[in-house]
Image (cartoon, rainbow, N blue to C red; front, top):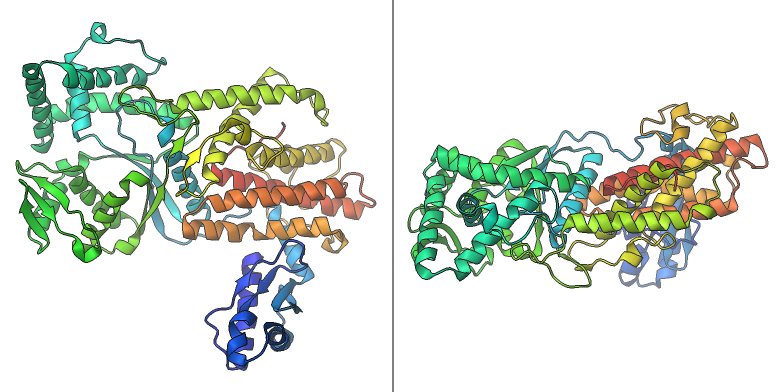
Length: 609
């Protein structure tokens, strides 16, 4: 509804400006302040004041008259009227706008946009398989998963990929160390009973050996490491199997960790795939034939000054071995062959490499408009930065465990203050602790603009009263509670299937709401409906801009609107059955909207808290 209303406002304002022989390139459409009885506004009077030689309020008056004539002539579905507020034009909706919002909101899939017949691959996380996932990198799977979710909900056909770096020096060192040292050579026990925590000790041992052993021993080790790298380049199957044994074991443990978030993947694409199929060699051959290729410092490089990049891209060593970027170029051309769009979520330390990659793909004749990057800054704890290599980091598992423990304590302290009369047993408390704890971590991280650095703070993330995940989750639980009370009292929710009263994900339907939306006269109810109406447009904007934090901001806004409605508008004890039914429909629509918005962020929506 909001999307159509916005289109109608744009059409009416454009027509009015055209009738007045005024430019239509900047309509200045925006959302008005919350206390304004309008759904959209325009500030275009400021822009036109100089051209018309009049003050903005007078310009707004002239425009309002012209827009009103257009509204009368066109009879829009949702655009009812335009009014002035000083220099601003305020656009109001018809009653059908709220009624249709109510009808749409009872669908359990509310917010999902129509199929766009466009395929998108979202690559994220792609952490080197050298050990457990640590907190500093946690933003990648959380932001990446949310990006994939919002693009999926916006109607795109999405595949989620993890690009596995199984061909670099780190994996050669890891493989050598795994084959060289025994358990007795390792200095510590695994921090957790999971395979990547066990095997990372070999990687650490290998690195410390290369730093501390006698020069002759280090030279021998380096020869063995180089032979592994060369074996991969030469397509030696035995070498692939040796490295694969380590990679697959570590990756299996990392997948278990990521599944806790959860962050799931459709495919784990190995880097060696593009060495084995010859595409990496083909890329190197094509690059050496370009005018930008130079042989300097014993390596083939590309000069990318034409793209505003000062640092050359090294794509082939003197011994003929490729680099990570060479293989990633082949990887991206494979993406372009198989998908309409390619989105990559990257840490800020990969910004230069991303720019070099984009420029080189352009040089090779690819349509780089297909490629979009989401660059994020890292997550820190108050204690400081973390490192996997020396084993001094805080792992993502540790953060999630702590989150669950803290959430459990918070839930238990609130048990005596609960209004609902449903009894929560230990399994319920544990379920809620997981939903709230992990949800708090995800929400706190994804709610920030990716480019801004984050220092994770427990008190903020788990604050039930502030604008955090628990604050929004509690709204969903309240909605479920009201719907369950209605079911227990044998009061049906108009137009909603019975499952909708239980909080089931399969709830809802497309049946029309047989209530009179006109009875929803309170400002709080109408404001809540206007927030619900915005949800599909929020999904569209977040997907277009690849900014899931837009959805997080929206969840706080609809939570505020719902809580105002909850305080001022009794539902089951409404003054009439007609009003009760209309308010029940709003609760059902709110439940679906909040659940689907949280779902995009990867945050569970509890039925009780």
